[in-house]
Length: 266
Length: 253
Image 1 (cartoon, chains in turn purple, green):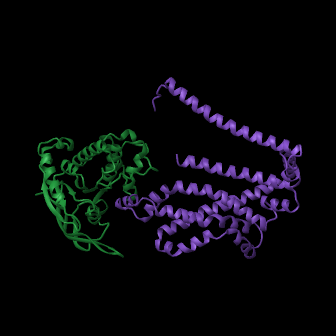
Image 2: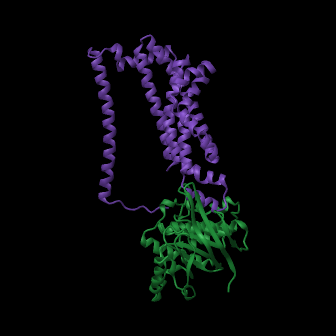
Image 3: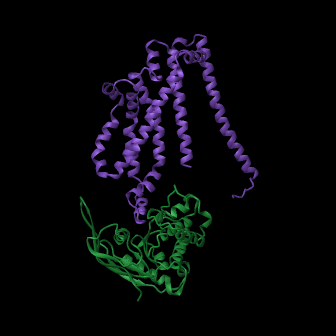
């Protein structure tokens, strides 16, 4: 058991100051949001901005209630989320697996390096129409579009991380009688976890981008489909609402990974 | 004369690069006997670490041979301490120490007891579940040597193991490690560029020439039989004499 050290008054003052600072930052953030929403609402009501193009918080709230009832909004959100999560899981699993193979077989890595660089720098939205022709429209195409956006970059990042792991730490395992697979499980993978998680944080956003590209082109459901539909029929309330929901999803997914990172890298 | 443990005979080695061949070791000969603590000092970049890699078999010699005669099983012929402790931050102290036996599937309850005894003896038993970052520099070095001893090696190779520490920690760690090696009755080969460290720890010092390196001179030191700690050795009268003699040899290397 740790002994409790008595806290001095100055330490108490310092801690109090830190708490106040943190709370002030949070309060200012909430205030900023409130002021923004209020300004948006008032300018839209008084005709300073056109409510048809820019909507307003109350119009969005009404639109939200309407869409939940009439358009099954939650099912669209659910589908986009499902596709994003599935793409994200595939990206994570495939990239870790592939990077591990490249680390294990340096020769293969050297041969494949230019291919990976080309695939990574290719704009993935250009691939989407081709994937539609190959696989048709539907969830499979959207998930593959989601995967394609982040996969190659992630493989390159993870492989670079694995390759640059401290050679002396690897040597230590060999000295202790270990084999290459011991080096992988005891050094490469554990030391790569911070990089894997930071890549996951980037990938969750990219997967969402990929899924949106896929849904723009090849879906009958999902937020991407709603956005395209709304833009075509000029329902800008719908469009702005979908974008706001996407923001919330992105924040939520990122936050989940942030919590995971704190738990694992503590 | 005690039992011969390691013999390095006519050893030569070169690195091959697209730019050309770099001869590093040329015709090196020496012997290490059981219970000795031998330091190898040489000018910077002369190939000390390459020599250790050859002795451990991580590099294959081009000419000559390295012969290790051990009684123990093959996996625990030698232990190796690197320039840094390389304790894994993702494991606690206990898991770090057990990593060798775990890899070799030989973590028996007897070995666990032995390791716990070592931790107790060298003041680490209360830190068993701490992460390496929570230990001081000296503690980390002691943990690293216990990790090396966990495989019960006959011979220990120490590749400048204190070079990453500040001066005070360095003296303390060298003192601790020197005593641990003596207490556990191990044979050790220390590679260092610190003459003071070499004299205070060793029974014999081999001075290497510059590249391509070979053994230039050998100093037999009297301290080990006097049962002095490395810190006490630094205070003896003839420490300075040896220091100057080795220093002179190194400068002429």
